[in-house]
Amino acid sequence: MNIFLREVKSNFKSLLIWGVIVVLFISVGFSKFSAYADNPEMLAILDNLPPALLEAFNFDAFNLTTVTGFFGVMFSYFALLLSISAAMWGSDVISKEERDKTVEFALTLPVPRSRLVTAKTLAALVNCIGLNLITYGAILYSVGQYTPDADFYNFLSIGMLALFFMQLIFLAIGIFLGAAMKQYKRASSVAVSLLLGTYFLSILSDLNQDFEFIKYISPFKYFNPALILRDSGLDMNYVWLSLAIIVICIAGAHFTYSRRDLYI
Amino acid sequence: MNIFLQEFKMNFKSVVTWSLSIAVFIMFYMGVYPTFAADAELINEMMANFPPELLMAFGMDQTDLSTVLGFFSFIFVLCQVMLAIQAANYGFSILSVEERDLTADFLLAKPVRRSRILTSKLLAALTGLTITNAVVWISSFTAVNLFRGERTFETQPFILLLLSIAVFQLVFLALGMFISLLVKKVRNVTPYSMGLAFGMYVLSAFGDMLGDAKLELITPFKHFEPHFIVNNGNYDLPLAYLSVSFIVVAIVGSYVLYSKRNIASAV
View 1 (spheres, rainbow over the protein chains, first blue to last red):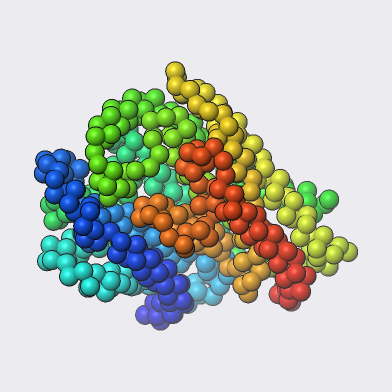
View 2 (tube, rainbow over the protein chains, first blue to last red; view 1 turned 180 degrees about the vertical axis):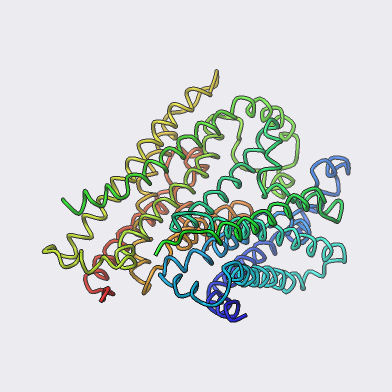
């Protein structure tokens, strides 16, 4: 419990910084959105288009004249921001002890190593939940003036849940790398290159049909806002896949860290 | 000279890794181009019939991706992201790493002025970045000529794109170094460099999506925006000068700050 509390306290500043970034990002986004919202010219044109065409383009999910479409478009940016923060926290929380040369002290405490990993994981999890809630709250606050319908709130909360899964995936990967990498200095750069790699792969799969299989490799492809809106739910296959990745990474972190040779 | 060589040697492995991964990235993405271009031409024909407002509402009113340069400018943005992260990484670590590893007092006890140390380190980082730059040039030329097939492209905007890399790298290197001197201690370089490079990228990508605004003008990604260079065959000069002034301010500021900096020592 002490380790957990200490960790939460030392991570708090980072959470605040990320929170400010996300809130800034959302307020800039909504100030731009105000130019699009209910733009009469655009609405008039949309009314004249055949519904089948709009359907084909998943129009509801990406229509910038509504808050729903706005969130659909913003989803991928939120995904990037939130997963970067999660990967950073995950890879840093364990490896920082070695970097700051405090690991000997931490490990002489009368706690098994796996308890240490658990406490640190939970503390990083608190940060992820915090940032997710900050994002959620800031969006809820900003959409108030556009009086969205119940469908939007439903879409938003499922979307935030999807983002939370992505955070957890990158958090777990980060923690695993922090615990398993021999060179602790590399943990965060490897975590970041994984994140960038999967992000770029997800862009590649949009360009070419041959790369369909990427949708299983890149977490950025697991949850598609268009499908979330259509089914008003998450694709359970990917939920299970995400959970599997998370469980394997966390178990791997416990396993490797308890037999780790420390760099002092 | 010794400091330069030592610094360059320390960076060399990372330079090779970055250069190789960017080269592989360019080859791989350009390799998708032939099949993509065929599809994209069909989509373009279809989209030509849509009202422009609809395309705008979807953010699809941008560069034509079926042309060689259109596609290249699209992957060049992602290339810029990687170059920015690399340069920011070097910038943030260049001076802070000595303090973190407690080797700064050893280095500063040498009979060399601080400004000399800074110059040597800066030149070493620049050499590394220039190697990466050269690799990007070579692999871009190879990839484009390998995969363009029958399609032709204008050389001038292409060269302009590649020429912009040097200034682009220097902005992130200089800004990174300057910020690392403004803060008390850089514990871990990655969050800083990711924050700077990715933050700037998201800001500019976001601006593309939702039309013009003032805030985006601070990001170097906007100063050398590939779409603009390809469409106009020229740089957006006022913005490019903004980048240059960032570099000057950050480097001069770094010399001033570093020569006065209070350095933490081991004992």
